[in-house]
Structures are given as C-alpha cells and as structure tokens.
Image (cartoon, rainbow, N blue to C red; front, side, top):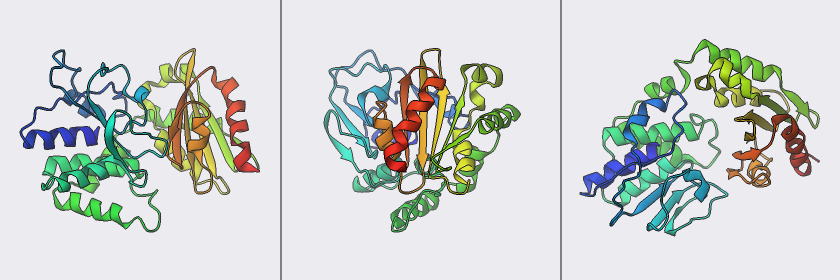
Length: 287
C-alpha cells in the first residue's frame, strides 16, 4: 500500500493522472487509515496503463478488472515472475518501497515528506523493523536514512506497527500460542486459528507478526507455520523461517509463494487436515 500511494504521488508530480486501486484487505489497524485513499477501478479505461506493485502473481490483485490493459509489475518476491509488459523485479530488495525510492531518484526527484513516510513504513513492515536484515544489506539502512532525512518518523511508524492493540488481540494470540505443537525435535512449530476464533475475538485482533516473533524466540526453532481457517472451505497458511529453511519452496507446494524466510498460501480444506500436510511438506528440509 505504501509503494502504491507513493508511486501515485510521484506520477501526479510528473503531471500524470493516477488512481490507486486495491482489493484490500485493510483489516490490520496500522493500514486501516489508508483505506480511504484507494478507489474502485475506473469505468473509463481509455488510455489507462497499470502498474502492479508487490504482487508476485496475477491472483494477488484480487478481482480488480485489469484484463486487456497494458500492465507492468514492480516486485521483490523470490517466487515472482514479472507478468505483463517488462517490469522491475529485484528479489534482493528488502521491500517494494525500497525499490520505489530508487525509482523516484532515477526520475531525478526526491521523495516528499508524505512519500517518505509511506516508503519508510513499507520498508519497516517488510523487514520486521529491520529484524530480518542480514550482513551486507547496508543499502537498506541507507534508504531508511534518506527517508528519515526527508521527514519520515521511525518512532511514529513503530508505534503504528506495534501500539494500539486491543485486549482481544492479546487474548487471541495467547490462545494460538497455547495450541502450538513442535515437530522434528522442536525445529518446526505449528499452530492454528479456528474459524470461530475470528468471530469471538474479531478479525481486527489478528497479530501474526507478534506471534511469529514470539515463536521464533524459542530455542532450536528453525521454521514456523500458522494455519488460519478463513472460511469453512479455505485456510491461509503463513510460513516463517530463520536461515536454512526455504519456506517459499514449501509455500509453492500449496500453490502460494513469497520469500525464502517468509511465505504463504491460500489452501482449500480444513486446518486439522492441513496440519499433517504442512508438517510432511517440511520433511525434506528437516532431515
């Protein structure tokens, strides 16, 4: 969302007409305020060109009516293939907002304060507030410094990401943590959220990032799988790992994708049945 809104702002500064479209979701409290800036896809599509940002495959754009339009992608997922016209793909980039910052400078511009806030927000969320940055990735901090120099406030962003949580969100997190099972000698941790949980605690109470953080702090853990029953027919599968386990490879086996250490998928079925499949899918990397 940050990359879309910042790119639209830049295009407008260049004299273009830009409409920001997204199918959401806008459930997380830190992104809910941005929902007001997104519009339905315009009915008059004459002369329209589409930039798809941070979507590794066509199904990631939801039901937006993009058929027949000239389209290019900007993406950083390991599993992405640039679809449509030639785009900008960099699997080594920490976020698409990082890439957007480079595009702004390539256009001979500097980000405005508003654009810098959006870009730093996206950089912080994609890197877990820099927890996932490895050695040699110094350009990430260079970009963060540039966005901060342009007026972005890291403290405000951290508060938006980790503050303002409801009591229900903490109770739901505790319930999910209590269901965690360990496999392969504790190297894989798996938990789940039932469909009724979202009704009881509210969908706004979901806080996946904090659950991953807590489970990754367990000694000996190498990978985490979180299964959420989104409806009677479908589950979402969230996967995280430390270093040597490629969760994007596991996600691809379920029709999903993502990064080496962070990936996911939408899977048909029930969480109870899916758990064994997920555990078995990790077996080749756990032996």
